[in-house]
Image (cartoon, rainbow, N blue to C red; front, side, top):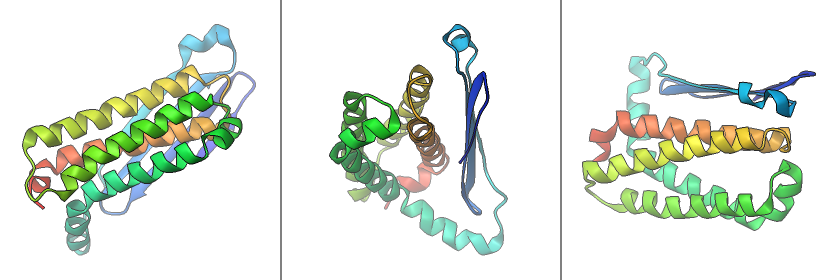
Length: 184
């Protein structure tokens, strides 16, 4: 994660990469003055990496575990945020109620994702619902980062933008590999 803070703007850039699978990068640029808040720019870019022959067996193993990674990641994140939301509130510069809401959403989402991971067969509609939920949450996180850009700390904005990138990347992979994910 890289951030710069100028006299008139705040920029947070984040890059998450799984070699041979995907690269997610994004940046959040927000003005530091309320008069210019309409000029905030949010850019999310997801690009697949070049896949080599040596990566193919590792990629297949990763693909088959994607729903578990998604569900368990959401569960851990949700529980941790719920347990330390009071402390995070001060560190992130975000309201504790907002962090509690984020924690609850993560736990509820985790229950759905893990329920899919436990199934031996999954319908296309259930997987589509998972992808849509991830996309919606990704946009909600970006909107929250924009709304709280003047009061949140860099850690708070980094959490929101990072979660948006992570969840957006999961949505892309789950959509891309939806046929493989239909069976365990």
